[in-house]
Length: 117
Length: 110
Image 1 (cartoon, rainbow over the protein chains, first blue to last red):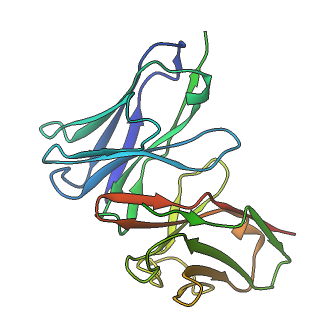
Image 2 (image 1 turned 60 degrees about the vertical axis):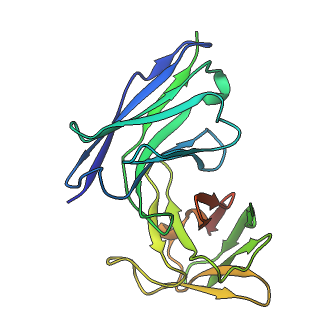
């Protein structure tokens, strides 16, 4: 059974960097694409970006200047870094497996990140 | 790139049928598969339809998907509505390296 689990700080100060880890079990991250999403309060689901094991990444245009997604294949984990955060980055963050755009078939449970001083 | 446009909200009574539309702004809706995800409050999204009209195991056949080239749109139809179907629904498609999501539709079952 494929499982994804997000982890990281639940509180980040404005202007600092949000860093999250997605631990994957039951599947190797050297197959498929691996994505980060977020759900801001009262808003819709937003794709932040994704990574392929070759290192290829693709980011949402509005976040591109602040986002980095990376992976550690030996640990079967991938990561999200979002710099210079503001209150607008407060959201539940999810990681998910992407079958080449055709299907997000496994999701983590999500982790709430609040940006506040 | 293209956009996917969904109605902001729909509502219907238990036992009835509801259809949620997803209109592609440019390019053919038939060019790339469309998926539908259900997200209940406090839960992760789950797939209810993938590859236009396929249901993952465990999704009841009350859920069906279709595409209409004449209106360049996809539709999610839920029949025999239950209160547990109340959720946000997102359509999703892709083109080469881009993944595109609709803004989501809030389904209220009242």
